[in-house]
Amino acid sequence: MKMDGKRNSQTTEGGRRKVDLLNKKCKLLEESKDGQACDLIKYIVKKANHENKKQIIETLMKYANKGYVEHLRGFAVARMVSLISENEESYSDFFESCIESKDDSKIYWGIEGYIKIRGISSCDFLIPFVFCNDFPLSCKANIIKKLSKITNNTFDQGKPMDPGNWKESDINYEEIRQWTENGFPFGKGYEEPVRHICLEVPETFAEKIYSKLDKKLAKKRAKKQDLANPTNWLVMANEADIIRIGNKWKLPGYYMDFLSKASPLKADLKLKDYGRINVYGAYNLIENQNGYSFNPITGEEIDNWNKNYLVIAERNADPFCIDISLKNSPIYFAHHGMGEWKYEEAFVDFTTFLNQIII
Image (cartoon, rainbow, N blue to C red; front, side, top):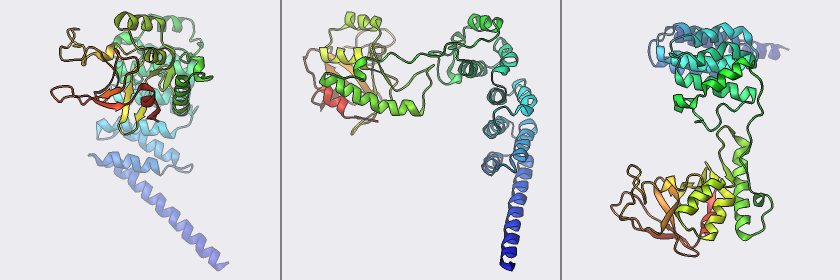
C-alpha cells in the first residue's frame, strides 16, 4: 500500500508539472511579440486533451483577438478550428466576430469554424457576405465551396480546388441569389465522371492495361476526392473533344482508343525511372501542345518542331512524344531547355509506356 501511495503521489506530481508547464506556455503566448508565438501555438495545441481543451481554446481565442503578432492571429483561429467539435455553438459569436473583422486570415478560418459548428444553419449569416464588394474574394469562394458541400449543391463545380485561386468570374451571383431566395434547398450533388465499361469489364489487351491503371487510381480516389474538381480518374472522352482532335490530326488507332476510353483526368501518376509525370487526356491534349509545336502567344507553328511528333505526356516540361505517322510508334523522350530537341527512344511502344506507370 505504501508503494501504491508513493506511485500515486508521483503521478499526481507529474500531472501538476504538466499543468504548470501548459499554463506557463499559455502565458508566454499572451506576452510573445515575435515569431516564437507560432511555436507556442503549435505546442499548446499539441498538448490538448479532454481536460484542458477548453483552456487552450480560450487562450487561442484571446490571442486571435489581441495577440501582438497580427499575422499569427488567423493561425490561432485555424488551430482553434482543429480543436472544436461539430455543433459547439457556444463559439458562434467568436467566429462571427472573426468573419466581420478586416483580417483576411481570421475571416477565412472564421468561416471554417462557423460552418463546422453551425452546419446548414450558417447560410443565413454567411451568404450576405458573398454579395459584399469589399469582402475578400478567397473568403467568398470559401463560403461557396463549404456550403456547396454540406448542402449537396454544385456551385463550385469545375472551379479551382483552392479558394485562393478563384476569379470573380467563377462566382455565379445570380445562381447564389436564386438559391438564397428559395431558402437554401439541398441539391442533387455531384455526378462522378463518366467511365467506360471496359475499365470494369476489359476485353482487349489494351483495355486490360487501362483497367489495371484505373484500379490503382481508385485507391487514391478512395482516400481523397473532391467531385467538384475530380482527380485521379480515367474517363470517356467528350465527343466534342474527339471531333476537335480529329479535325487537327489523324492519330493512330491505338492512341485514339486510349483517349476515347481512358483519358486521364488530373491523374497523379509516376513513371518508372522518370518520376512524376502528367499524361494528357482528350480534354487537354490540344492545349498542351503549346510551347512545343505551337507558340502559346501567337498560335503559330514552331519551326524546329518535328510536325509528326505529338506530345502525349510531360515530366516538368520534358516531353514524351509519339510519331503520328507511324502505325505503332515508340515513345520518344527529350529534355527541354537544351537549345535543340534531342530525342531518345524511351519505350518501344505505347502499351509498354502505360505498363511502366506506377502509383
